[in-house]
Image 1 (cartoon, helix red, strand yellow):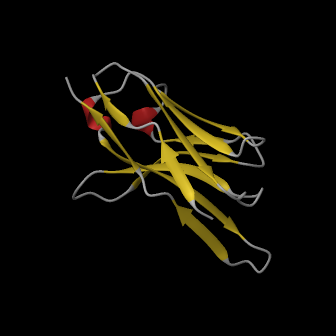
Image 2: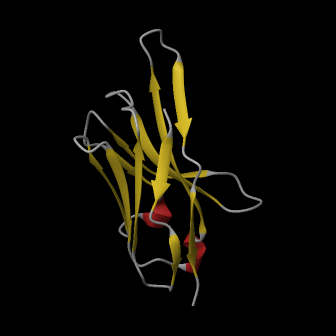
Length: 120
């Protein structure tokens, strides 16, 4: 499974961006699809997650009310709508797919990342 992110860029504080994630082949319908971000010198952090098979969502406290994760199963797309962006949101954003296969072996896939820069 090769995940590919798109939609990053350089914006000003208060602006919005929408990140997209897709893959050429479908992940498992039981996968958790997540967005992480990482800045140099820090660990990658989970910022939002959604299950293909349900509506439960997780958000990092610092993005609650500003970011929205959504899915389009028919188009095999995951989105991250980011509003009211702040300089501290500057990072490389990664898409992740994670599930256990029929043999209970964890499957974990990452995209190459997309840069988001928020600067006045």
